[in-house]
Length: 453
Image (cartoon, rainbow, N blue to C red; front, side):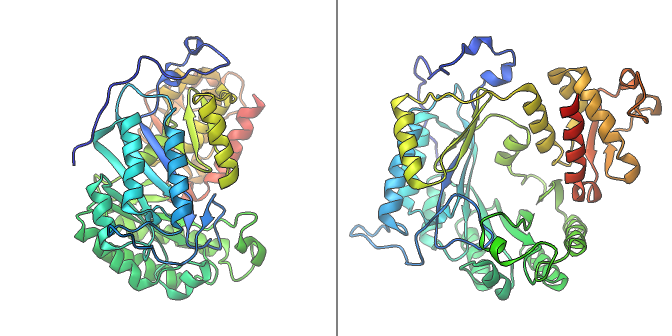
């Protein structure tokens, strides 16, 4: 379908505490070309989840007289949609249309087609969406009908991220998921019937009582379905979750660290052998199907974030919305009263460098040393290079285009070694899979070295 465009107004809301022209980094002056929309509603809270959500129960959508459905928990969702659109109505307007839109949650597929269209219309009216934009939506098996997905597609959704998590009934129950293995295949069939050719499935490793046989089976079944994209997430037991109350790290029924590491290595081997590119620490894609929206985060670029618990990144500021419906409603009222201008600390150079490293080293292509040097200067980047290259002998770090030996510092503590760091046109990265497996160790050391200097 064609996406609408609009003329930008003569001005955008300005930050109140400083003149934007005083910002030295021109990147910070660029408004985002990507937007994240948080839809917090879920049928129930999964036992591992600490996301900002609102539970609406298992009741089905309610029919209306015009044949449309109102969505699950219709009154709460309708109020939220109105509030979300109001929040967007005073956001700064970019000079170019959006290139990516991402509906996350929660469970966005609990929206009715009409509710989704209302949000998309609000986005188009305020920002405009490029005709070639990637418009993604997270969906859970068993939460949508063929009519829904057909409607979503008709209004512009062209990529779906399907929350599969596991293919075994006992593991789905163990996680508190509401769908069944049969729902997974049915959901994919509906996506294909609706003409969705760009979709991803999410899987989780390290679940309670999950064996290597279970994980092998999930990978084999995922490969057999041949989705264009697969995301693999290792369970993190977050404070305050049901899993946090029930389980203790290092003890059964959670798999051991050695088992989860074996799962990661097995995943890398099986999926790359099946033709998937391991382009990010948790993500695999067939050629041409990398997630464009997530690259905005991984490249530390600006983005809009709207909705309960969402975070935006503009003008060097990260602005987080409250995580409950009541506090979010109060925040939106204040946001509108101030015409989309709220003071938040600007990200410092040190914070920006740490953010860039944390997300950039998640990518298989690693980080461009020269680009890093031009942006942050020689001294901190020399520290980065020296620290990372100290892990080469472990097999955790590598240069993509190996520089000459004389240009690589082999003794990071040697005085004057920084002057020998010359591989400015090369990239440095974590190895796959070992470097990715030990990324927390490398990053912790890197952050400690940088904050010492």
